[in-house]
Length: 220
Image (cartoon, rainbow, N blue to C red; front, side):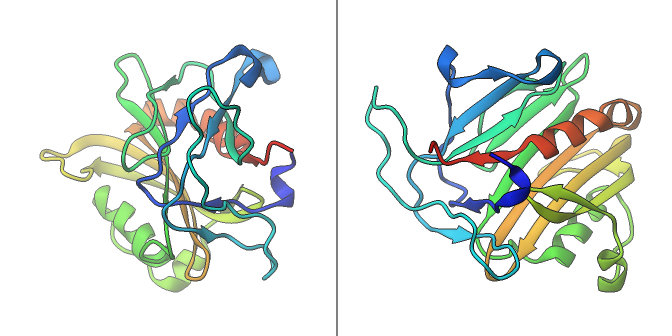
């Protein structure tokens, strides 16, 4: 399925993503990298991203599959970069990776209904976590773009001392890479990487690989 031909639609933060580990539910991508497929079970709320005002794809609310029942619903598909460890989902994250000798680097995918607070608020929230000054709407509009689920997502790279949610002491000399898709009528998708600056710099190509590999399979 061509990720440049459709948009992703998403469920609530509380939706459970279950890793599909059976041999017939995974494949090997370029250079031997494993392609991971994750089932998207029941959603309590529907929302969608649209492409040029035309809906291309959306998740539908449906009952979670019973044990042993083969899934026929939409699935999140992505490639795990070499050296990254898939930590599974959490309440706030659909996909969650660590990397680095001590797992000090992390990269995750999160989704929110609505615009998730809006593009400007989220860009400046991330910049604030790095001790960077906020940007104006005009400056944010001028930020570079990267393709995410077939749409141009806002990309930012920020160096500084990182203070994440609930963290106490700031982590010195960190770098944040992130992409954000956000629209009031459709939803918000976030891919965020943080870690020591040199480690993140060394994994920038892996970040691009992961972001570009994110796709949705309808099972058809």
